Structures are given as C-alpha cells and as structure tokens.
Image (cartoon, rainbow, N blue to C red):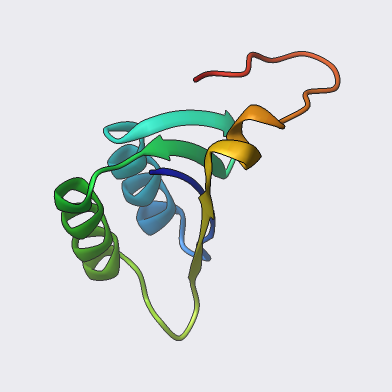
Length: 84
C-alpha cells in the first residue's frame, strides 16, 4: 500500500534521524513529506523505528493511506515528479 507520511519534529537531531529513516522506505516529495510503498512487514518495521526516534510530547508523524484511486488521481502543480 502507498502511504503519504508527514512529520513535524521539534529537535534538529531527531528530525534528521526521522528523515534519514524515511529515506530508506520511500521518496521525499516535499521537505517533511514522503510517499512510501509499504507491505505489512515494512510498515511494521518503519513505524516501530519511527516511534523510537520521536518525543511523543513534542513531535508528530502522520500517516495517510493512499489507495489506487488516490495514487492514480494525484496532481502535481509546479516542479517535481509523480512517482508510481
């Protein structure tokens, strides 16, 4: 399943670690937004790793599932690439 993942991490060190972790699972489409195609095993691994990296009192990570209709219906305005 394709996921749109965005994060807001207060601390620079934690933010860097979250971004590095996400880079191993998908493509950065904006500064703090990634598109990741994850099967159940990779989803479990990623969410566990991210949970260990953040401070729940200060940071947030949002996960939006994108079904095939949503992925196929994406629209890009301006510079960038739509990945499948």
